[in-house]
Length: 292
Image 1: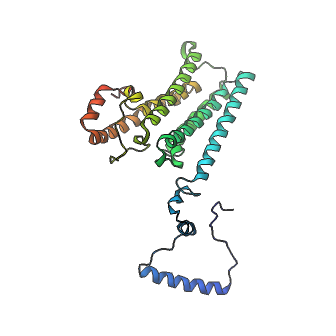
Image 2: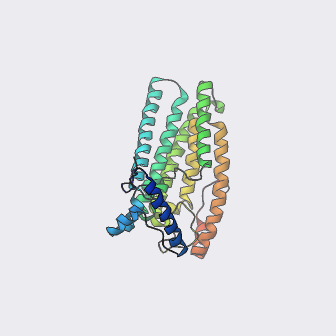
Image 3: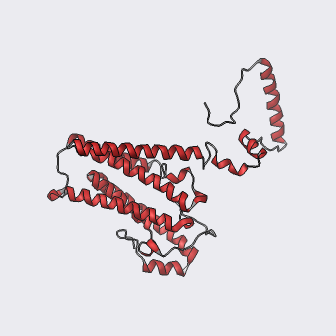
């Protein structure tokens, strides 16, 4: 059953229908040859009749679909709640290190929900289903997290009692990872809230009237706080999960990604804000390793 209330109803075809269809096809071809405008969809016609064509983006299967927003929020919330329940059960009733798997799911669910919420809260006009970033950098993003999940699952099942950290530093590294996840998430979400309409998930090539150079608040300590936040959030998740291979992989890939992105973005920011940004760049660090 379609979720589009204006989908056409199917009916049984007859020989007369075939004749009419052929005639209609010839008429349509003639109209196209004469430069006729394509017929509006039933949804467009319905909204136009109500004078509400500007509301189309909020209908099903549209970029700002309210049903799409609700579905994604429900799925992320359910995943977050279920993973927390499993995590608590494994920690309280077992000695298995598999609690790290639901931890990762909970961290991912919270991250993606907050990406949308912060955008909707302070940059409402551009908020859409894509603001959840569920398919961002697809498929590389999904492959990276799948590899992390599988590495943790493998070590939890095959080497459940092995000590993966040198000098028995496992508990310390897990605690450090938790701190990095929490701090990284806070810094990124705070940065998006403070930047407001000046924040965008995509590097902008043209300066909009709403763009302002934000240098106060958290931007007074981090030049790219959202990048700082995700970089250390990603590394923190791998420390908690005890992933040796994926920790190295995340560090290398994320560092290269943000190095290139910052270089590209700052070239545009210098064009937008000129000397004001040059002075800001001299004064405030990224706090990402080897990226000044």
